[in-house]
Length: 447
Image (cartoon, rainbow, N blue to C red; front, side, top):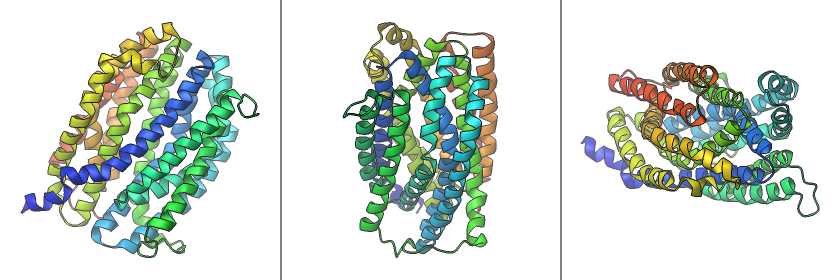
């Protein structure tokens, strides 16, 4: 009986849901690759500063994106319960909150970010470049939060094809705008790293517009409760808040420790920071696949629990994990065998290429553990118990930061050794989330 119910979440179905997410994350990664490749031709300082500023921006963006992940779980649960109109009501309430949050964070960033960078970044050149990037990039934060909510709705209702269309539009607009604004083509001034920020901000506006057009043309807005704005209701917001706030805090803290890693690296020198930016972007090639499969697993878990099939959660997680390894491992092998081929996408400086190879090898090895860590973690979140998921990750992040402080800040190890922190984090996450899933304490969680 269980096998027949599990067939609804077959490998083919996993692929059908994951492929559009994969394509969209691939295209989003190409956007980051484009920015890095362009700035790698400007200067080594611009390349390093874009790494620091990009992660700093992600710390702020993850407040909204993390909240949208939580809303996605609630939407998935309502979709699994067959309460389709409620999915739209959940979407609108999530959007109301994120618009207010986006405006508040934008204003606070304008006041506080320059001071934070002065206190944390040692290189004056990196500090000035990073500050210019952040000012322009954060200006589009409310737009980015709105796009994240639409993405959460389409993934939660398993209508992931919309992500492909949207991402193609965003990629094309981002490449064109960054090419024009970084290098000063088509009569525009050459703005360097600030041009990258402005181009990315404008592409967010294009992306949101594309999502809205797609929703109006291809989604049954009346059936899903999207056709009219509902009034704010505390009873609707309460279950959203219970799930989404922990996902928001978890995402913020998680990416905050990633920012701490880059701060530690920056203290060791501009070359190590430039190497780490290259490794970060190569990591994104693999990460995009992992995000697609883990997000699919989370959505399927949420829908399975909503339809009363909690017994399917662990078999479903194992299925997603096997599928993830089968697709990601070949790419890891390819990157390990030809590391310079991938590194040269981001820089044409020979010494920088050679310095980056050992770190790329360490990264590829760490992904053998990162794959189960992220699949397990997203499965825990998909059950709706995001508070427990946050607590589990706090343990892993505590170990991660302590390891970084010792290896990078105190011992000043080579940058390749510093990247072993990813494997340490993954080991702790696999143990914590694996034990929690086996315990069954997530059963019966209502949202």
